[in-house]
Length: 371
Image: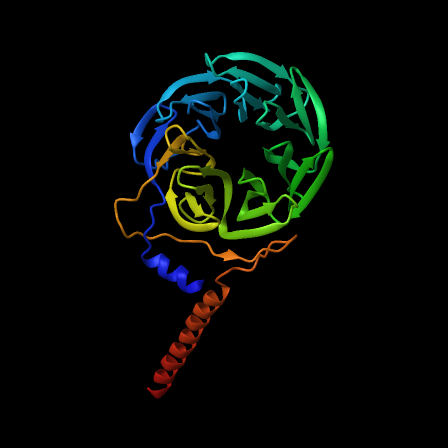
């Protein structure tokens, strides 16, 4: 594994995708290539795609509507817009807002791109998701509710602050959350009136349904594969980074992960069946990522530079380029390994430097004494 890492870091060729366009939301303009890497107060967060390939981008007080090719076709004012869900049965967009003093769920028609109604809540609404049968679920406080018209019907309680939620047919709900004070995370599963949970020693940020048997969980430092029995059956270590968003390209059969790096350029990590195959540089702090089956593009919201990166299938201009691949490590059922994957190499390098310094110092002192 180490040999593969070193060899691939030097020259590795793989058509993992290329940054084709960058959409500047502040100016509603689209340019070739990118990234911008400049600060902007627009701050886009969540993305969803409708049946026609339109991409909705939540950005503070605005919902931007992009065409499948990335051009801005409309902006809709929604105060404090954060999480979104698209119901492909009723063609309705749902937006949660938690900005004080208003806590609302806004319904937007995908037909005329206008607000249908707003539901006021007494508590902060977090993640919201629309199931395949048209049912809409929202996490408010520490409870998940079923949205029935203008009423919230309680389903199940959970611990921590929710970060993401997905629905697996025929009605299995997964929710990720974290407890900051205790430095732990959770994956909750609700099915047939019962709640199960998996405790993590890291914070989960995003969920992706892969098939009828497992999900992917993007966390601080890891990408986890979890089955429906809530066992960790695979993981990839991404030291010094966190995964904030996940999406699946049904055309190329690749997974794309939005990675916020603590030590360098932020990027999108491309994986083939849990095997990292390359990186694509994007803007500052990528928050969410979505595949558009109409255009075939992957859209990435970059929080700090106010842009949306658009990735297309294909290869970079150079056939040989440098990529840094994280190393897969064995999974453990309830606890994630935290040992650095390259610790022996680092230790050897540090020891070599120390020994060289000792010998050099001894040589200098000997020459001085000889004089």
